[in-house]
Image (cartoon, rainbow, N blue to C red; front, side):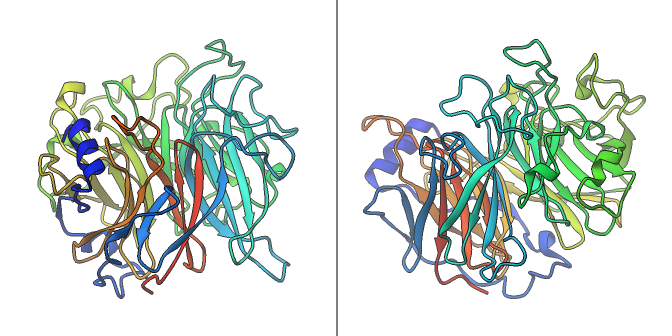
Amino acid sequence: MSATRRQILARTGALGVSVAFSGSLTEIFAGSATAQGMGKRGYGPLVPDPGGLLDLPKGFRYRVLSKEGDPLPSGEGKVPSNCDGMAAFPGPPGRRSHGTCLVRNHENRTDSRSPVPHAAGLTYDPGGEGGCTVLELDEDDTVRSERVAIAGTSTNCAGGPTPWNTWLTCEETELRAGDENYTKDHGFIFEVDPHDPLRTGAVPLTAMGRFQHEAIAVDPGTGIVYETEDAFEKPFGLFYRFLPNQPKGGRGSLRAGGRLQALRVPGVPDLSTIQEPGTAFDHVAWVDVPDPLARRTPIRFQDFGPGGITHAQKLEGCYWGGSSVCFVSSFAHRADGSAADHYGQIWKYDPRRHRLTQVVVFGPGTDLQHPGESPDNICLAPGGGLMVCEDGDGAQHVFGLTRRGEVYPMARGRQNIGTQERPEWGEFAGVTFSPGHRTMYVNCYTPGTTFAVRGPWHH
């Protein structure tokens, strides 16, 4: 659906709030501890917010935790812009009120509206404006503190949590020292300790590759890290795994290095050509990356030998659930160079069976009652199912997907960054839940806003 038609429908209230997709979500949750109770429906229609910020179902309420341009409580400067990937961790140990720590990415490159302030001991490159901030919250989601966790990085898009409760923040860029204002190479992953960022500092995990990183997920049993690449031009990104030299993990363990490999699906150079949910490939191959640092050639251009390598457009969200890793291709367009078109796919890789399965295909975008498109960040929801951030045109939603295949609206952004005649809304990003599943946290990318949402969650 064109952006113009969706904007018109949103203004008139005629826009539907369901997502068209085919496939079985049961595949995603097989073996997961969240599998019970997944058949429950959503929470009803969205209620217009009199405050004009966030529409939610009846019985739910939100709190604005942070907004770009406001002073940081730490006194380090202003809240940075472009709020993106995020994760929630248990609050600092030893306190009566444990609360939650949120680690939040800021996808700033250069000339951003509000860069991440450079903090002593936490700044990688003086020319970088990206990074992460940490919000420490009480049990009632009152902000106790908000501070810089890493700075001087670039285009911090997504990432993912580790089993040892740190955050891996990913740079979605391949810019080198000498480009723009940078003094160091970029395109790395950095580890962030949410409770004491100085313990992890601003050290690039170079063995994990230098490319346009999007998100990661860690296999808690083996320590293997899976990585997505959101390359903007053909050849598109790859799906990677990193075999760490210290598989038992722990804060700082990834600095010990390891081996980076890329996924090869024999006979499938482009995942967009697979359009039938349930299609599975057994015994896929993992091929060593010739030059993980991409000293001369970006990884996706490198020679992987006979059989080549498998690419996909817009590889974004990535998470571990049960015994498998799931990852998202937000869309594929022939006009951009993909082999086929789609409006979003979810893939599942089972490392024990060496099996890759296409679970869900979103779209088509031609039905006016089905505006959902371009799934991006994804997380498991209380009581089972998924929460999906929409990153398409027109109205922006967080959608829930039940195990039975029912799709329901969870939130709709109401901050108009366009005009009355041609409204626009910032995408959602970083959806995540508190450790006790009492609160959903989500970012609006523009204007950078972090929300806490509470209500009668299914458990």
